[in-house]
Length: 123
Image (cartoon, rainbow, N blue to C red; front, side, top):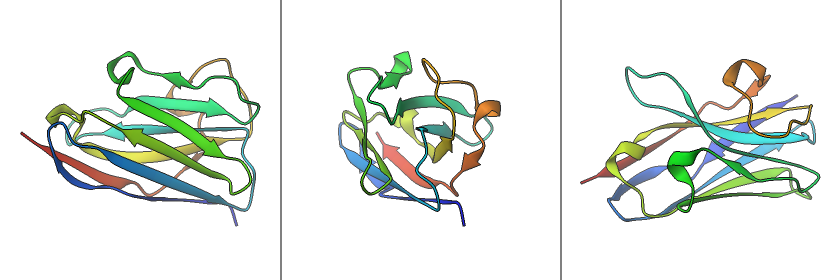
């Protein structure tokens, strides 16, 4: 069965780091990435990459702080988050798709979503 399972969330102080993981089962996706959603706000794209090595692609607000990577042999994608700030507090969702794009599409294009992992950054 196709499934995405996130882990690695937690609570840190501003300036700290976390590494999120997303393990995919049932399929080797061509595209994987991360979205996040804070309470009362819309989901926003964070980063994504392709299985052919193109990218990775980042939203402007995380460039230089976050790094997305993937272990294709394990179908696992990671999000290394450094210099975390309170505004990064959100539920982080792993996303995947069976198609490739030159960049990160909006949420409606992603067919598979994980359950989310909470990231909380205190001031």
